[in-house]
Length: 69
Image (tube, rainbow, N blue to C red; front, side, top):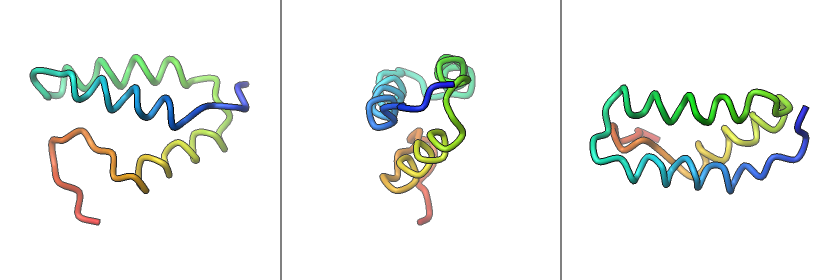
């Protein structure tokens, strides 16, 4: 189990991959999700929660919808 995830770095990579998409549709976003899901499957649950909080707190989105926060 990975205990020291650099979640800020991974979040920036995910956001960068999303921004590079020419077409932001479900199949393209699914490919990105699968890529990172595979990479994160052995990360400690606490680290995944920190990662999710970072996304929420920094309002990182796919660009498909405007979050109402």
